[in-house]
Each structure stands twice: as structure tokens, then as C-alpha cells.
Image (cartoon, each protein chain N blue to C red):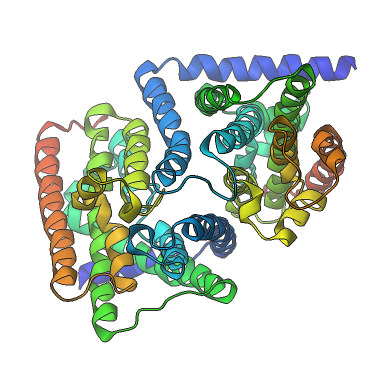
Length: 268
Length: 265
């Protein structure tokens, strides 16, 4: 346990250093942060403009889609803030900087994730929190629903965290294929912005039992909105997000060390 | 001839990274599938939204994925090298060359765009055609129109990206403007949502702006929504923006080179 606390402290040290260095150029920092708010917000502006021509999409209204959008955005936003830098692992392999990290007395994953920590990634969290807050005013809250909402955002963060790490491991084999992971991380985020009723049943089953993206927002939101599962899947799935997140953590704990073991330095 | 040589070298430079290309094709295809289902749901509600039917809408999605990298909608391409060369002073070497800087970078970007069109344009479209019912350009007029429209789309996008990169002459770091420019490009090109289903007023404005050249104009030619005079009008607007923006690039470049001070001895 103390090992984990030390790791968190080291993560804080390294990321704090990157925050101070990014704030050294305030104009650049704030334009980039503002730009990030706009760029992540465009997805929702797109959905909102769709609703100028339609009243519901896949049987869901704008506020309900706002809830889905906000939940998945908060999930990927938290994960991206904490581990977004892991995407750049291929560049570190190419440049040989990964070797230097391996000899330092701090866990490799902590260093890779904290490296080039970008505070401006808060932009996505703020922007999606605004949409989520707006959509939440349409939910009839009960204590249990509030609990499920908290559990949903936490699980969503953990699920995207694991997807970032797992798919970045591909770069230990092919260092220039970083974009492959985007299909699952950012692609997963885009996909879960829509109600899953717009997709065929096979895709929804895959997102439930193979790649558990449906647990990021879909099942918990069905509970928050008091809706029956449109695909007739069991209601307990609406509470199963933490379970799905835990299973992915277990998988990550196997995949990451395997990737690191496979790594061979480019040096001499 | 020299420009052709620059373009072929740029083509070969990008073709080196096979794994990156394959990963990109996969990612474009995944996003294409997601947006296709979302648009099918929208057009199931309003079967004639924006004058498109559902086949047009899904085809539009895949044209968008095909042109995403070709016109470098997110930024990228040869113009991404420019800010670093300005900061490091290597721009002095570019200015030394007995060939115009603008033409040099444009030729390189056209070479890059051809590579991206043939790989990340073509391959996801084939994937899309296997999974969904797509519409192909049906008349020789549409095919000819596309042969002109796609290079014009790349040139307009290049000119915008070049102007953004030139802000580095004054700011030394163009990443802020680059990001804001990507926001405008994604929204006003019709990548976030087809411009044809924008609300009245906003739609007319968006269609007149340079970003409409990136995706909406080529897509409408592909789908046969622009024929005859409308087709020529679309191409004319693209060409007009290309000329105006390239002239701006030349002007900015002339102002910048008069003030540029190369660091070091």
C-alpha cells in the first residue's frame, strides 16, 4: 500500500514540474486551453444542431443525450488528464528516452503517464461537466441514483484509463502505430456520445461483453433515466460498471508488464 | 519540374510509415462506422434532411473520412514543419533556395495529399462500401468535377494552414493558432455535421467560407447535388478562395521576411 502512495507522490512531483513549465508561457497555455474547450465542445454542438431538424435520436431526447455525452466525456477527460501522455510511448521508444526512465527508481508507468503532463486537458473535463450539469437538471434524483452517477463517472474514468494503457502497449511492437489506440479511446468516446439504440444489437453486445464501453455511460444512464433496457438485457448490468472497470484493471495489470517485457531498446 | 520532384519526395517521405498508415486506415474506418449509424438514425427521423437521403448521408460520412487526412483537417502536412524551422532559424535555408518558399511547401503538401488520398482516402472508402450502401459518382461530369475539386480543396486548406504557421514569425510558437484553426476547420468544413443541415442563415454563411471547399463542395459534387452551373459555381468559389488565400500567404511572407532576424552568427 505504501508503494502505491509513493507512486502517487512521485506522479504529483513530475506532473507538478510540467505544470510549472507550461505556465511559464501563459499566452500559449490559455489559447491552448480555450482551443481545447472549443474542440471537445464541437461534438456536442454537432449533436445540438442535429436537434434543429429532429426531436429525438434513437428514441432519446437532447437532454438524455446530454447526460450520455457528459458522462462519457467526464470519463475520458479524467483518464486523459491522468494518463493521456501514455500515447506518446512510441516516440519515447524511437528517441530512446524510455531507457532513461527504466533506470530511475520510480515505476515506469508513473513516469510515462506523468511525462509532459498537460494541465490544459482540464478543458475537456470542464466543458463536459457543464453539459452533464445541464442534463442532470432533467433527472429525477434519488439517493441511489446519485450514488450510481458517482460510480458511473469513476468507473468511466477507470475504463478509459485502462483502454489508454492497454492499446498504447501496441507501440512496444510497432512504435509508429499510435493512432491504432485512438480508434478505441477517442472512438469509444465518440461512439458512447450517442444512445446505443442507433447501433445494431451485435455491436451493443460486443460493447457489453468484449470491449466494455457500454458501462462507461449507457447502462448507468439507463438507470438514472429510469428506462428499461431497449435491447432487453438484464437490469443488473445497470449497476455493473465498477465490476467491468475492475476486470479491465486486472487485464491492464497483465498487458502492461507483458508489453514492457517485450520492449527491446533501440540502442547500439 | 522541380516542384514535381519536391512533390514525389514528399509522397515517398509519408509512404515510409506503413504501420502508421494501416493504424490510421483502421481508425478512419471505425469512426466512419460510428458516424454512419448516427446519421442513419438521424435520417430515419427526417428522411430528406438537407436534401440528402440516407444513402447520401452515409456516403457523405465516408467521403469525410477519406478527405480528413487528404486536406489535413486537423492541421499537419508540410506546414507543420514551418514553425519549428522559423524558431530554429532553419527558415533562412528555405529563404536562400533559388525557388519560392510558398511553391516549395505547396508542392510538398500536394505530394503528401496524394499519398493520403490513395491510402487513407481509398482504403476506408472500400471498407465503407463493403459495410454500407454507398453512392458512387454517377456521371463523367461528377468525376471530372472531383478531379478538379479535390486538388483545390487541398490548396485552400494548405493556404489556411500556411497562414496559421506563419504566425510563428511573430509568436515563435504557432500551436495556439493551429488549434483554433483546427476548430474552425472541423466545424465549417462540414466534418462535425454536414453544412446542408445547418439551420438557415448559418448554412449560407458556412457555405461561402473557405472551409466549405474542404469537404462540403467535393461531397456535393460526388453525390451529384452539384451539376451544370452549380458545379462550376462551386469550383469557381474554391478557385477564388485558393487564389485569394495564396495571395495572402505571399503577402504575409514578404512582410515576415523583411522583419525576420535569424538567431546566431
